[in-house]
Image (cartoon, rainbow, N blue to C red):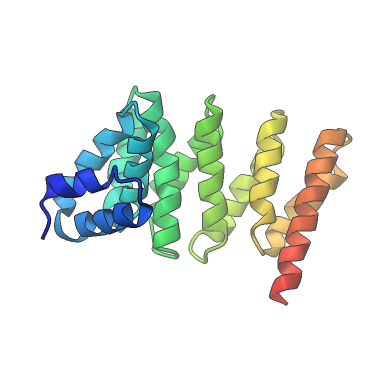
Length: 206
């Protein structure tokens, strides 16, 4: 078996398959040692390094939940804060419908109200992923729907696009409400675009 140092070198390999294989081995055989090392890389200046670390964390499952929440709450490094919601996206993609603590949803609710739009986008992506699953899907949709009442047009647009990918009646209701209750042409356009995408998604599943 490769050493942990060799596996971390593979995380920087340009081939994503080699990166994924290294991440999988780290999660299976070096979990306790590798997890904090990956979290430290969230502060790295090289985007290739911290992006690889984000993807790597996605293989660690529930063991990464609490460390990510703690890092998000305590770090003063903005790059690391931006990485935390994105790491949760990877976790939920790799481990769909795995139960997770309420503190995750609390972190994501804080994330969509963050002043940093990169953090906001990551939180919205994560809520969109949860909305497609069974566990806490309705809670995620409610948070996305709540974002539609923001005064931030960029946030409304991103939240509406996240809802457009969730084949759930609650998502459709929220988008219709957005369309019916706003006169702003930009918001109208966002609502119509999202509803069209959602309808196409629903049609493809019927």
